[in-house]
Amino acid sequence: MENADKKLSYYEKNISYAKLPITAIHIHFFRGVIASSNGTQNSAKDEFEKSIQIINTNKLEKKYFLNSFNFYANSLIRIGNYEKALGILFEILEVKEFKVRFPVYNSIGVCYYNLKQFDKAEYYYQLSVQNSDDANKAQLSCNLALLLIEQKKSKEAEKYINRLDFKKLTSIDSSFVFNVLSEIEKRNKNYSKAIDHINTVIRIDERLDNKASLGSDYLSIGSLYKETGNLKQADFYFNKSYQLLNQFEDKNSKKLLLENLIGLELLKNNNPNGTRYFGEFLRISDSINSEAIQKSTNALNLKFETSKKESQIKTQQLQIEKQKNNTNMALMGIALMSLLSVGGYAWIRARQKQKQHLMEKQIEEFEYDISKLELSNINNQLNPHEIAGILQRVGLEIYSESSEAYQTMTKLHRIIRPSLTTTLTENFQLQLEQIENLLSFEQSKINIPFDYSIQNQIQNTEIAVPKLLLVNLVNNAINHGIRKNQPHGGNITVNVKEDSDYHYFTVEDTGKGRDISQPLQKGLGLSSYEKLFFVLNKKNTLKASLEIIDKIPQTGTIIKVKIPKNYQYTIN
Image (tube, rainbow, N blue to C red):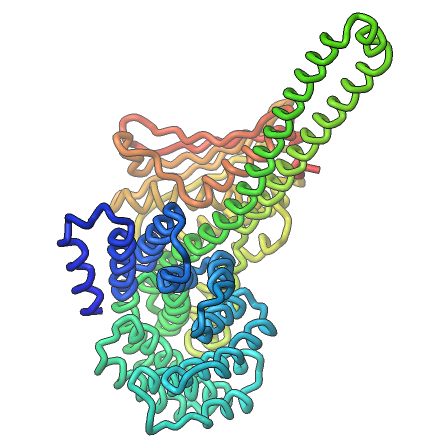
């Protein structure tokens, strides 16, 4: 790290050389190394990417800049872009002059492991171990061992670890090895040995001042103490982990930590803390899901745009072909023109129309694919499976420790359980019951006074409506209207009615209201319904809509949703 700082300082101070591509490459490279060491992985990825762009723009030979490509690939791995990382890594292997291949084999194994392609991961991990030098064999063996543990091959994993010479291990290697040994003992339910091994890891990482690793270490030992029923020690280490993980971008570790903290706080019957952690968990889950959704959407959009450009090029080629045909016909004289006008010309026009129709059909197919992907992504965003998963996991231990906490948990589970389906819609009557449960639940739990009323004028309560629509509208009113209007609270009114063409869903609160001088911020829930309507409106004659109205002065908010009675929720 200190070496990277010095080299970066050197290149940045030598302004006279700054215009040379090689200097710019090194500046971005060392900035990336420093950013990675500081735990800001997105910044690191951006810097490595800039160095790669300069290499490619100036058509420099890859064999002289393999470090830049390797670091770029590993920065992509750290932010979870495994497909793109694989592309870069296989590019590196294509360079014949590249001799030290085991780090790349290992990185490829990491990608396949995270993509759940375990056979390929094991193959490349084994290649990395077989081709490694003694200095790196420990870490590479640990990666292979962790994969084998994941596949329930703990004995085989232990063999790889026991082949290592423990006396020759560096501090960093020892940290890796004892982590793996702890995981093996945990799988065998030898928790005391597992805790001993993690304590060894903690001592090493504290001595190295490796704060990024310590956050995960404290999470690991806290989980082990929780398994043994030592909640006091679990709480101590979870809180130490929480303080450290907040400094870094490791969302997956933080998500796992929050899941443990939620269960622990419910066991302690500490509702305020549990609620706070639950909110954080939802936000970080939304962020992880949104990033995954954005990646898949970007990939399909890129495919679509590429196809569109190819179609445009083909269209231009057809126009050129048409102009050439017209010119040739003029030169060939009136007799030939007459012949073409009767038969040949009509044939050419028919062929052109056929090609044009084929291209338009291809574009339509890509648009259809995008719409299907968008609907799937929206459905994933609206699914409460993750919340239900937490409640199920912590349910048994909560039941044995605290009946009051268990009752609270079961109320929450009753609210979301009916929506655990794979469809985009659900029964309207079901949603009326959900919001009644939600409002009574919140009324009993928050220390802010509020009243509510539900007015339904729709005759047929068996109609299909978007999943969790009313729950999200009501939840928005509670969180942004009532909670922010402490200590006064307010009223929430749910009004549902219909006319000959539409169903109307309105949720109004008399809470604090939004600061209209600020840009309108919509949560994942409301924005998901807007996306849903945007996609489905293309296939429906009458359009659905969502409208947010700020009451003036700041005395609350009205959210109106209008859905046609014969609205189609498929794009087939």
